[in-house]
Length: 131
Image (tube, rainbow, N blue to C red):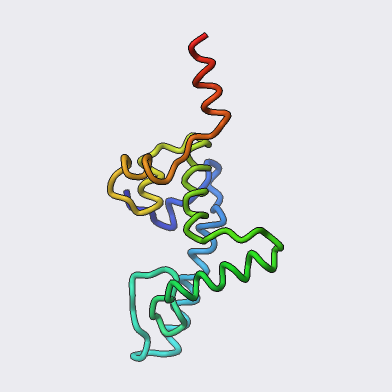
């Protein structure tokens, strides 16, 4: 499954916030590339420095921590937010193959075993199905 900016739309055809953010990032990268010319380092990464180089993971972790602090939220590792995203998508009924593609996994079985977690309500509902 290829995820494109044009495929990130809600049922009414309006762009979702992700699509808007991707378009803005793409526009900014085009401006950066125009400004730097041959000195711009082209890459396939979405999150890049103004020079086109990929952002180092430590910088993302540092900024994530600052965002949480400024929002006065409890510290959660950025990778844990990935687990939460997968679990919430699963609970909303998003097909596991779509979640796997969203996370960049080749195997939906891997996604199921690692990134989605059973929730108390789901376990209670499963237990009550035996009545």
